[in-house]
Length: 105
Image 1 (cartoon, one colour):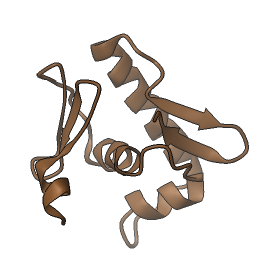
Image 2 (tube, helix red, strand yellow; image 1 turned 120 degrees about the vertical axis):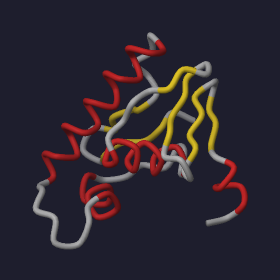
Image 3 (cartoon, one colour; image 1 turned 90 degrees about the horizontal axis):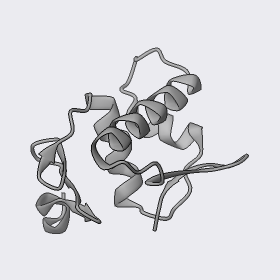
């Protein structure tokens, strides 16, 4: 892990600490599951890059884990709800119809 990544990622008062696997918005911790954290971290780390459901699936699932692409949709939905509950915003994660998802740049 690069030093920059170890220090965490930040976007408009949303802070992600990969070492502690924590997410904060204006200093208030947003509780996320491991899968939710991994997905949000992936999207923010490559901010602006579109990821297909398949690409996300391959990044957030562990070997031998039995899930499907619908799991990606559900996980995105849960992250959006949690981010909205803490920030009042619904525009952090953007759906690109027919292609996938990206984190707002």
